[in-house]
Image (cartoon, rainbow, N blue to C red; front, side):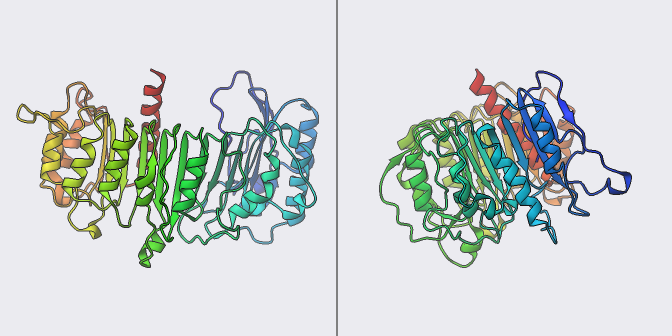
Length: 456
């Protein structure tokens, strides 16, 4: 993945990769400027040609470029384009060591680092303790069957003296994972009190999630996407006073095997007074009672709520939403295997603005998304009626119906919604479809909407 740069204040100084025509196919990322200067930093991006496993730029090319910019901090990206990338065959381990030996010689200049965990050679870190005093962010990525926490523990020596370290992310698919060989908590040693952004996709039990949230007093954004089965031993109240965004999900394989994850236990004891954005993926037992008690106890103003396969009745969903009067973004992904869905006639009537509805549910709602399973028990036409009623300020601006265009059960809704795309005074954005692009567009719009409010 390319390094994120929000603004380029001057033209990039680049070292373009020279590739002959017969080797031009198969590159993981863009061919241009693998080494460049952006906003006063040397940005290095190493790419692999998926056809022949050739990496570029070479260690010697990187070294030559660095010699021309000896005083600047360094951002490194040495990863794959996708988490689904096939494991390269006959990979040159000596070449990987040459890259990392060069990186470790630069450790006083590290600002950010993004590594594909299987590429990190253990031998480069033997008997080396390379502190990186300028290091702000580390991202480790890899396949679901790779022990990324072990790599995180190994390279933790790099950030242990940095007073600027704020972000750590461990990214992998949460299916097909196994517990790390790292004993107990798989989170690597971090300056946890200083960390503001944390993402852990490795298997982790709910007790360690609670330990981390309790210790990370400056944590603002947190994601635990792979909460695994455990004994549910959580019984001490704790507070995460700076937390604004929490994304949490269960390990579905453990649930399929009948092993409870006790995810709901986190909400029994957590208090998060500044929480604004909450995303929950829970194909497991769910306790609405403990969740609503968490909202009341926290006295937080939740603005974005995402329920994915969370088993609750219509009455429980309505009760939950009554405790979130400041809600602006709502996404509900149902699952037919859960029985009756929570989005029924009463729920939609409560969301419909009309003279008879004096207690409008979610009066500030601006973005709304549902999938076809969630409305499987809803009669055709009810969705479009509700949306048409919410045209006055504050109005619903963005609606995503995660459904097929040929869905016969909601043929009238889809027909009306398709016409709404040309009526900007009604809805600015109507999306009908099931695709990764639709999900990405929704996620981006949510971030933008929350960022707009934060700047006001």
